[in-house]
View (tube, one colour):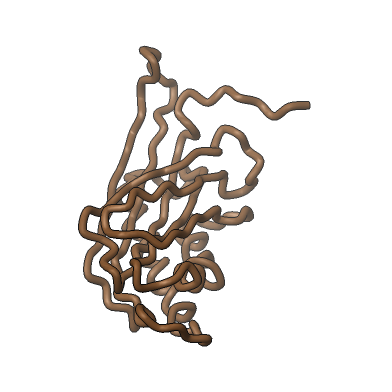
Length: 184
C-alpha cells in the first residue's frame, strides 16, 4: 500500500471500428486508467521527492490492473502503452516526473508480460478539467509506426491545486486504419 491518498479512480475505453466509412479488419482499442492523488508537496519546494518515487510502483500496479480491466483484452493483445500526469496549480512538473519516471514502469510492464521500449509520457501543470493527451507507442519497439498514436482524457474536477492526476494507457490494434510506412 502507498502513502498516497487516492481521492478518485477513473477509467475509459475507446474502440474505433469504422474510419471514413471503411470497417476496420482489426478495431483500434485504447483504455485509460487514472488516479487522482493528493500531492504531499503542493505549495512548497522540497529537494527530496523520494516519497513520490517510492509510491509509484504501488500506484502504477493499481493503474495497470484497472487499465487491463477497462481494455477487456488479453495481455497478448496489448501492443502499445503510454503514461502521463497533470499536476495541480500548487505543484510543479517535477512532482509528476517523480511519480511516472524512476519506478513507475516495472509494474506496468510486468502486468502485460514485458515490454522492451520506453513508455512514452507527458506531464503538465494545469487546472482541473485539463484535457491530457498522452503519446502511445509500441511496447517492444518505439519505431513501429502502426502503434504511434495518442490517448486523451479529462476529469472535470481534477486535479485540484493540491492534487496530481496520474494516468496509464494500454492499446491494441494500432492506430485506426494505420497504413503509413517508415521511409527507406
